[in-house]
Length: 181
Image (cartoon, rainbow, N blue to C red; front, top):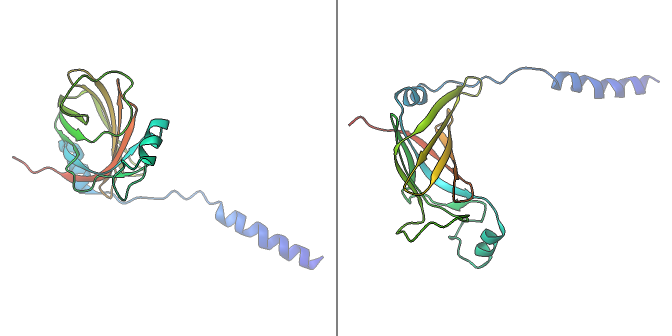
């Protein structure tokens, strides 16, 4: 009977110790806070993460994905792709891997490229995780974009682009401060 009590205690005590409600506290990043306050930063893209569709799987199996990449994560390091915010002005040049749902016309680029003033922009800080979420809409000549970006305290960033004509795509990169001109 004594051994059973010891075994029960050895099982029950770690459960109570492991179930504490301590909230993880993240350190603030004053550089990130200043970038968001000034609305002057750029996310330099390292990877594209397209939606895995049947067509994308066909492209991957045909060998058209760059070396070192997979259909879920395409390496774009050093390619110069970015999302830039200067006040309410937004500029982006993002490689696009995915499907078009509607025509795009005959243009010289298949990338997601826009430059202009963002509509409905909001920047919200998650005080617990010390992370910012930036949401806005913008349009170019033929497409409307809904963009959601995040900037973390370690200056890592993500960009999610939903388009009126294309399947959704996500990007991962680094957040950098823009120099004053």
